[in-house]
Image 1 (cartoon, rainbow, N blue to C red):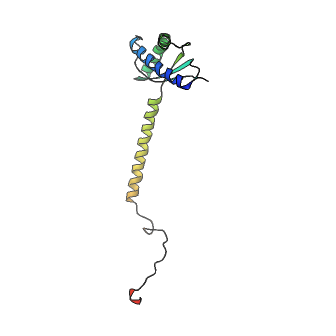
Image 2 (cartoon, rainbow, N blue to C red):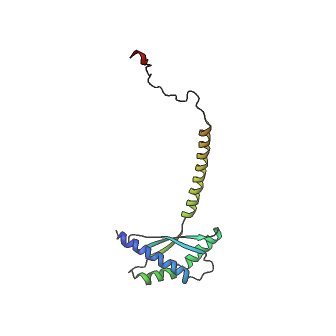
Image 3 (cartoon, rainbow, N blue to C red):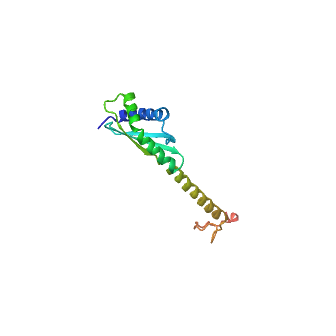
Amino acid sequence: MGDVARARRLAGRIKQIVAIGIETQVKDPRLGMVTITDVRVTGDLHDATIFYTVFGDEAAHAESAIALESAKGVLRSEVGRQTGVRFTPTLTFVLDSVPETAQHIEELLAVAAEADARVEQARRDARPAGDADPYRKPRELETDDSEL
């Protein structure tokens, strides 16, 4: 088992190197507006999974994936040169699904808020079927002040 803190530091460094490398070294016209969102390195420091997002539609996602795969060698060389680790991790690019998931959650929250508003409106206009207070209460003895 490797050092988790070292893997985390290496992941942060790889994130910086790859982001700068995509911006400055990769001149592929298929590459769209790519943002590196996260990097995870295995405990043995041999594999790095790079999560990215692309601004655009499905065609832009596919084109950017092809461009990143073709630039993988250049980016791995740059990672090896700048990190100085004994074994340069293999790079795997994965399209990050967090933005789509967040959008789906936002839509579900909007539906829930609308349902809550309907329930609140129904509650506001509702009247009790029986007494206003249906719970039993202990009887209160009526006392006449004149008897005391």
